[in-house]
Figure 1: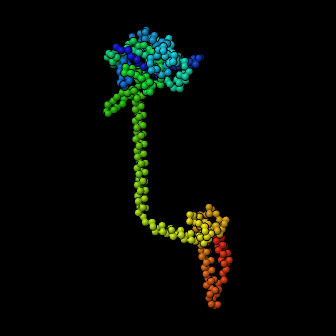
Figure 2: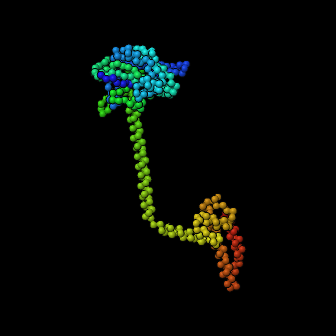
Figure 3: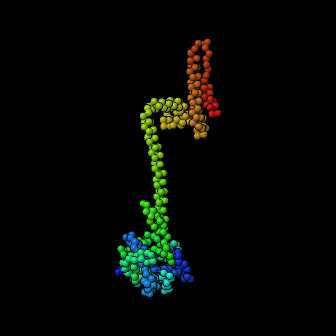
Length: 366
């Protein structure tokens, strides 16, 4: 037989805690009880251990649960006179009583910080105690066991986050230490059946619910993966279509189209230069800006921002046509002066042509 450490966890929510006039919390908690329990060891294995009534209700065991220090989480080492001042946030009482198969003790939590943490949701309790473990197989009230706990001696009561693996990990269990989770005054775990590869297994309802949640999350992830794959396929289709279009455009001979655009640009600059200052550079201007400059030369109040592209093009073309008419008029006058006297001379003065140019230009605004 060997002496080892055990930790039993249960829920503080099942204990009615009362606030004292000093602000402390008081209530009753299970210290230990009789029966067969599953203990989870550090290596992940489970072993069944029996606590006989004659061991649980032995006077030495009962007395060991009186005036135990209460700690916030389990300490790395057993509580003793060297560390109790630093670790204790309260104490169990001297009132330890037997109730059916349970050993129940009063507790009082005095530390303000710990009380605030409890009120914020830290609702687990876990007794730390030592036992002498005897390896012996048997059956107790219909349940099999592999070991018997003897010489049960309480060491401390810890406030923990019940059921959280992280908190259990803080115990730093060695190969012999183990913990057991059970509810106050109730040893009946809610169990569920699960079928794995055609075989039924009975597991804790909490584990069953967790597995269901994981299965749903896995299904959701698969659906999300499918949606993402559809989007990827769609994007790949668009990419391939763009590639094909780029290849088609790269094969197209645009030389003729480019040549026509160059000719049109040269023609535009040439036409516009007849209306602008001789040394004015318009090579960097857009077609629209060039046409606007020409229009503004005749109508300074003209505002291109208020007009459409079509309007500007039409107004510019009208000015060019007027210019052609003026030039035609001049040529006709020169040619007429050389004809015989019987021909009718066309007397068109430059001022008349300029006036006509301006009038026709202004009329194009309407």
